[in-house]
Length: 438
Image 1 (cartoon, one colour):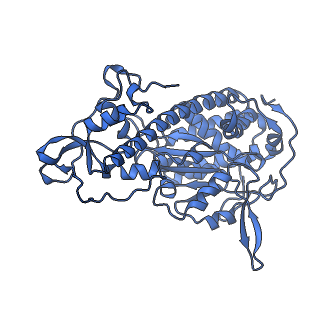
Image 2 (tube, helix red, strand yellow; image 1 turned 180 degrees about the horizontal axis):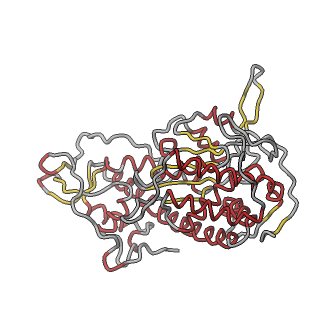
Image 3 (cartoon, helix red, strand yellow; image 1 turned 90 degrees about the vertical axis):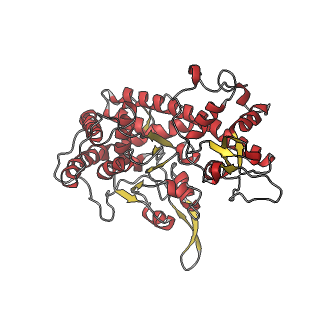
């Protein structure tokens, strides 16, 4: 028997509630065809097979991440029985880290995939129903970036769709009647850089990196890879389809709480249905990956605080074109309400500042100030994109030369050059990073 506690839960009665009907969609296979249906006892072996297939084509950040992707794929096949639809956030610091290949594998294994790069909200509203597709969104950073513009409705839909019975109301039809559109659907979103907090908080997060030398994956070829993965898709549908009612009644013991529990519970349910080593493996992955994201959140909050504080320092100085590194560090440390005086072992220094800003693509360079003085400095215009993305309430425009304001100028009158050399990985002396203040 699956290692889970069970209780009776009434089925939701909204339009996006559970549905035991045909699993079909436009242009998609109607379900398993020529493959024998596995019994529930085969679940662990089937998940093992799926995990091997996923690991064959992509290098994921950890074994826990591979476990999570495997369970997420399987979960799409019983999403009509679930109370939450966990997002899968596939993010990386740069291109070429394997995000699109992950989506390729998902496309051939999940329930009724709907792959898109640029889709209108109206289309999504109309394809999500009692038996919703699995949304696969590439280049998600274009949806959530500062130039996304009219994508606000789509962001709201993706947030609401994490939980059942959160419809979007619109005026529809010739009689202009208020109409609820279901939003509940599982979604995988791939993009460069972190997605908005509201998405990340509802997601199993894969932080992809470029493959190391020696890390090999099989070539993804449509003629060979697609049939192989489709066989697994059909086996998953055959195994999990008859278990939807059982899955809807399960309340598994969870090692985390609150929204993390909401997000991971569907994956743990699948693991408990499979049995074997999967219940323990799923909970171990849940703990490890949620803890990792908690650390990332703390670091991200610190960096966002730094961006805001730097914005305030530029503003207090009349928004000059540049501030020297020395002056910027001194101003940060002098703020008694900020954590910078206790950052590291002896307070924030130039190295720490550069290290914290590196992920935003911001670096210092040699600049010539008035009276011929040259020093390492940070140009204000290098911060504009980071402010717009991470502090959207700080309205930014290109800096203008106000009369009487002394502007910093690049050395020799040339455009700013990228910093030369490289910085060490960790702070000098092996400092452990910022201290937390109470």
